[in-house]
Amino acid sequence: MTHPPHANPPHITHSLAHLNVLISGAGVAGPALALWLTRYGARVTVLEKAPALREGGFAVDFRGDVHRTVLRRTGIWDEVHRRQTHMGRQTIVAADDKERVDLPAFFMSGDVEIFRGELSKILHERTRNDVEYVFGDSLATLSEDSEGVDVTFDRGAPRRFDLVVGADGLHSRTRRLVFGDESRYLRFLGYYVAGFSVPNRLGLDRTARLYSEPGRTMVINNYDGDPTRAGVALVFGSEPLDHERHDTARQKKLLADRFAGMAWKHAAGALEGLESAEDLYFDAIAQIHLDRLSRGRVVLLGDAGYGATMGGIGTGTALVSAYVLAGELAAARGDHRTGFAAYEAAIRDYAKGCQKSSDHAGPFLAPPTARKIRSRDRAYRALGSRLLAVPFKKLTERAPGNIVLKDYARPNRQP
Image (cartoon, rainbow, N blue to C red; front, side, top):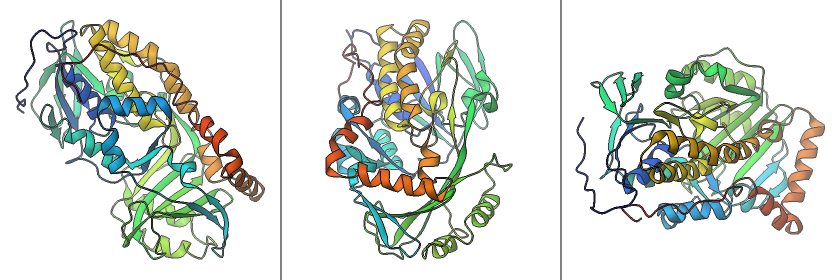
């Protein structure tokens, strides 16, 4: 592995040029932190177990002043808007596909919405000339002493770094290596979610249709305007399932069984595409809870430290947290003890507040009884009205806006 050329301008206040940092995870949190650290002069390596950037994924949205401020300070506000989904209305339907409730775009899409994969691309484009990206490899061991961290990898040669950041998602290997098994920190919320692509047989154009039966919901959508493709999302209530997280064949059978016999006229056609789907996503709806986010020279960022599978405003929280972590390290002039402590103090309550919004995502999307489905639909209808549009928007911005952003020292490089 070789480092890219990196110029550190002289006479820079709060420079991190003396730091060599490894970030595990090239989703959103990792590259966002890499962007800020390199602006402060640090040398950064981003490690990703996938062979390339992960494309596609669910759409993510940003809401309120804090998100807007961080997007602008990061320098990606305009590009995020240029690549946004432009998602339109989403409609709740009956079994015969008759429309019951229309949800306006702002209800689900916030101020701006973009595919997670597109956001990852934007951040990678802005860091690839200053950051060493290593794909197709993972952490194997971490061994820390008073001066640094010795790291071994599944494939690459051993390396030594000053700091290690775990930005490798809800099922973080970094967290497992440093803090222990995932079972100690993952809180299952009683639901599972899946997603995959199918042919766009409904002719959807940046719209979605949602159908619910007690304990299970199917959504067929078209976010990107591609007339040939649609996405299917499945949410269902369940006891914890005994399955291998990487066993795709087992997951497909499980989903086919769970959604067999669904009365919606388009359900069977959507499930026909499940068997041949090559992009299946399947996971428990869960949250990560830890007492602390750092140990020694290792710190957790984004979903690895305070993630939620869905509904937890996780991507916005990741961008805010990356800005704060880099800023606090710079303010501490690279002293990880001071910088990590300040980061935790600034982020902990904020991240918990955002995460809490995911507490009821499963039962709201897939209510357990017919009565609760009707109640959910009435709530959707009311919240989508013009009368409640403004107060609802303010309500959705409360958690992502519940932090006072510091204006950290000017970094070496400006966006």
